[in-house]
Length: 369
Ligand code: NAD
Image 1: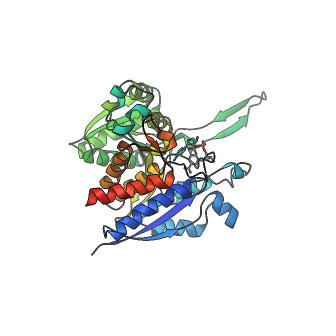
Image 2: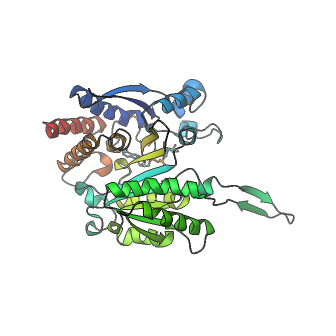
């Protein structure tokens, strides 16, 4: 008997609904082939929810997210809502989901698919076969630490303050996610901080080092964040899994994503703690935004959203075989020469969102035959 999985799908704004529609084809194919059964609830978030309900996300949507086995998110935001205050903006939807579901470990793969090796700004020899997973702590550190703010000093000058704060449980839980990922990959973990100049970085290093005894099969190394930025450009293939703080992860994961050449190709996941019932809240989304410049034109690349769904199958539903099948189908379609405009190359055929989505499903059908 195939288990029934509950998914909350939140397409959002701009190209979000367009690329999510293509994931719908994959879901339908999986159900038709009886590879899985899904109960899918779809809801509004971001600007779409502001327009319909006056708020970027409702309490009811949060309840649905908590109830689901996983959340598949599109993207939110756009010029229409840019003038709203910080307390009303579409982006609050994703911030609230992260906070209310306790999603603390952001997983950003940087993978160079063979057919796209020329899309990187780095030389093909440097990035060919690249497969890095960056685990960024996403609910602590300097973006949330207290004290924070801007104060006026007695002499009239101003002082801006943000504080990098980490406790050992915060470091341990994200490091465990990273160790466990490394165990399933090439068994190498690099912990990144600035232990040379920051006390919180020293605590980070000591805490991760102390955990290593629980994962004897993983080779742990430590690196300063500035060196890591340099190494990611010099020789990125030296890395398997990287674990780091919110601030350094923000910078390093953006840097790593550009090694791969296109925003339209990159998925991500954000995981929470495993609850008493053995379930882990998790949200999956492409790293790109709502791309208002191309929304409604039918030309967005749907692969990042499809690959986010593959991550969901792998990490939330333990469906490795199906995840790998979708990933392989995406690679094969690119290798066959079909490209959306963002990854177009000489000699390839330019196609739109829908043709790309249909081609992936045709390839799935072939691979599964
Ligand atoms: P963006 O990622 O939306 O777009 C950057 C550039 O990449 C654009 O030229 C866009 O056309 C292109 N692009 C992005 N995804 C693509 C795809 N799938 N296929 C082809 N081309 C693609 O970033 P932005 O322009 O800085 O932001 C636009 C809006 O998205 C803003 O309102 C921003 O706040 C929001 N945003 C939301 C999220 C999220 O929902 N998690 C993340 C980033 C930005």
